[in-house]
Image 1 (tube, rainbow, N blue to C red):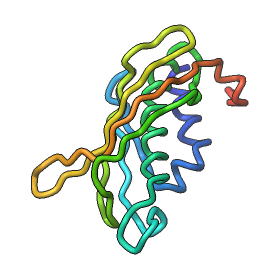
Image 2: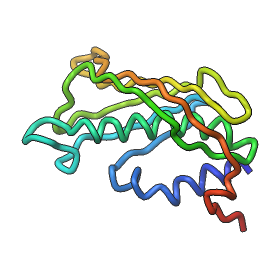
Image 3: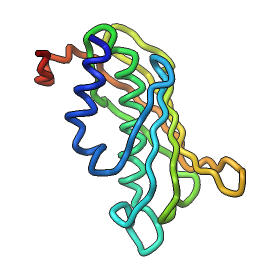
Length: 146
């Protein structure tokens, strides 16, 4: 069931595909998401829009939660999240985001995330966030299990 839910999420996630984001599950409750900043992410000729970064973060937190709840036939939705932008993001930057489930109850998960890039061998922290997510049966989101 877990693998099927993750597969269906990849299939239905039009937003993530349109934003050119991709993820790998490191272990249940921890994911790595990647996105390269293209022209479609810009707010100025050189700087990424904060909404693109927030979208990456929300996806990262959400899939971290999903990787934990899918084994129980559940998916997650964002209840709230807070993001702090710590450094600018520019055209061509290759972003990596790590999301980690800190606490997971039957319905409520608390998840933290970081987005960073590498420059000249140094890891530069770009944003930090935390969020609360609701877990619910995948069938409620119209996931079709054939």
